[in-house]
Image (tube, rainbow, N blue to C red; front, side, top):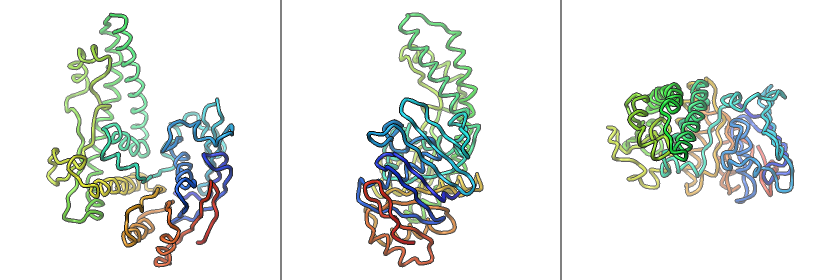
Amino acid sequence: MVLDRLTLTNFKNCAEADIDLCGNVNCFVGNNGAGKTNLLDAVYYLSFCKSYFNPVDSQNIRFGQDFFAIHGHYGDDTVSCILRRGQPKQMRWNKKVCKTLMEHIGRLPLVIVSPSDQTLITGGSDVRRKFVDGVLSQTDKPYLDHLVQYSKALEQRNRLLKQMWEDRIWEEGMVQVWDEQLVRHGEYLYERRKRFVDDFRPLFSRYYAAIAGADEPGQIAYSYDGQPLDLQLLASRQADKYSQYTNVGPHKDDFLFLLSSDGDTSLTVKRFGSQGQQKSFALALKLAQFQYMNDCLGVKPILLLDDIFDKLDLIRVKQLVSLVGSERFGQVLLTDTQPGRVQAIFDELPQLEHRVFQVQKGEFHELGR
């Protein structure tokens, strides 16, 4: 998967840009706030139909303008994301409007690594579920369909619970209607997540060992209620009635990151891991995600690395760039604040195809290749 050319209009702080990219490592350097991360976010939009950093689409339109447009050229295919104020967002594939955004998800596999990834370790279970859901949504179309339908049924059931509480009534049959929908779609989510963790675990362990050292174990586990979902819902009925919320189901699951090779679920990296271990876990998760998607799809995803060199010495930065620039990976777009550091790395790795762009106030100027 290679993005040959990216064209932006009125996206965040960028008025206009037309950038030709190489198929290996593309580096964008500049001060904080210059617009480096905005470019990566534009590429993310083309894969996921949304921003990685700001969920409010209208706030990604350049100040004082009425629309933004992002166009990407992937070989013979052209992909566009266009948003006008007050109108629905449009995704276009070879100039044809996608009927739904869900139709587009998975066409352009992508993995992003950013400083915010540490919330995978330190944040709540919703962050980890979102990560797993994002991986499976790109590699398993039925999973995405079931996830969307489960979310809709959950929203309707919660709305019903709240309405019945306000009206001081209880309609068992109406609740059962939505229970059946949750069971139908939720059981698929359970089974697919279990299989994902089984397949993902050895990939994660291998990358974590490579980053943190072979003597330091690391594991991932799926934490969920083992009972069938219909029995969970039945047992939770009274609690749901009074809380006006669905207390059980796949939307309550968690994924545990453990400092134990024997699966001891008490030794979570969130609670016992050092900052270095937490950062290593987050990076290993994303590199394992890349490998998993490559294995499933037979296509190397685009890899976005946003400001991940912070607090790394030059030797470690060189090792990381050499790794992601190898044949194991595909096209890479990365950002950095230090042009001299980037140039020193590429001087030592002359065999690595690369392009370097200076970013200033939303403008992009190529420095060299």
